[in-house]
Length: 411
Image (cartoon, rainbow, N blue to C red):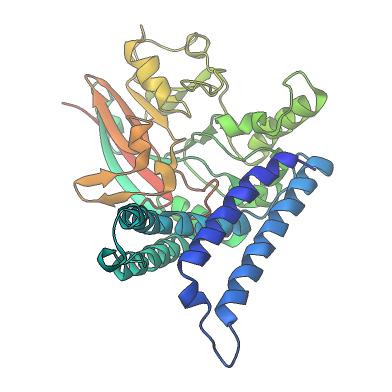
């Protein structure tokens, strides 16, 4: 048993008690001679505690690769984040009441202030809680697999004119351990193939932790078709580093080896700090793929020097690198001009606003390049918003992304 689980459980209990006591006049209402809402509230809360306790024990004693149903834990997250945000009007109300109590302490009985809860703030708490709950639940039930085609024209200065409108379908962050629907993945594959792509480029995070997560989806991914091949690189989650295994352990090595083999079985040509020359209509460009390189504490297995050892310096170059921070930290000042980097990783935080001429997400406070196309002089980066999801099994505002990139010569 992981006894540290009791810390978040105590925190959740505090939220439950505070929220219940602050709204007890609603929860204690009688229906058919019985306080249904009160008992429903606490039965649901206790059930959630038991689920968390069970899976804490399950994780420690059965398998480091245990596949806990992501939808269940997302629903728990939605319930408690809704309650937590809904507490803020109640905290404001209690702060006001505290000041009133302090004031009353120094006043006579005939000159005291009413310390009952303010109805406006109490109602605001319930409205905010309900709004967040329904918004995030909608993101889980509806937006989770509502794939969106994002079309982008990208101009590269030395791109061959005879390859104008070369079509790349860029996908990223499948996170198949969270996908839970073969039919929906088949739907995404059909959409991708309908674009008749010249290349399909996948910029990493096939799984969450273990290669086994992708096994049920292998046949679906084998159906991806393009004229000049399907290529991939590794994302930070593909290394299996988040389950407490040491890289020199046999279990880690076995998982990593199987994942690399599985990428090939799925039809991807995996580029691991290497390059290939893509030829079309008698013209060529360099496609470079590096292992994951991320700023901060993320692994830095990517080696751009090794990856470009054998490239033709006269040709335009497209780099596949999972983490967009690689671009600003290394590629922008790199000795060899990388014309375009393709990345993923951010998921657009799976939450935000994206309308014509405006986009916002909390992701922007962590990554300066978090979704779409960015330019700096002659260097560009395109960041895919991710096709799958991680953690929260839904999306609000930032939909699952199938990016169709049309490459043109910049005159």
